Image (cartoon, rainbow, N blue to C red; front, side, top):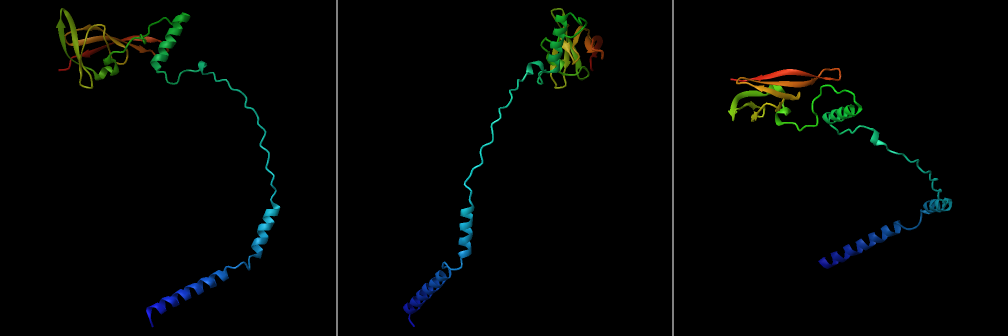
Length: 184
């Protein structure tokens, strides 16, 4: 047997098998499928539902001018309330100046600040205050310390005296003396 004869026989066998498969896929036996397709095509309605009726939305007026600003700090709210009371002639009692620029040492509670020394220049005494972040600041009478609007009223060799303005719990403010002693 030659190699050419084997190659021809494989080709004949392949063509024969292909013909058998194609005969198996002939049109016979699909009448029920064709009948179902015809039923579906004939039952198709072809009618589209109408669009729903458009109902106009009632206009809404947003009146946020009457509401408080949610991003406003409590200090600003208190300042605005104080200004409103002053215009109305109400209040008029003791209150801190909420409109002034805060000093750096007002960012820390008074009990975290430490007096580390004093200096004298041109007859004016100043105190050296160390903050929790390690910075040493020089202050004079009239500067502010702590978070309770404490204003320095006197500087001595071993103490800094100040007066704080704190809320009294009844909607008013009171003065309270405080001091920082030198730390050795």
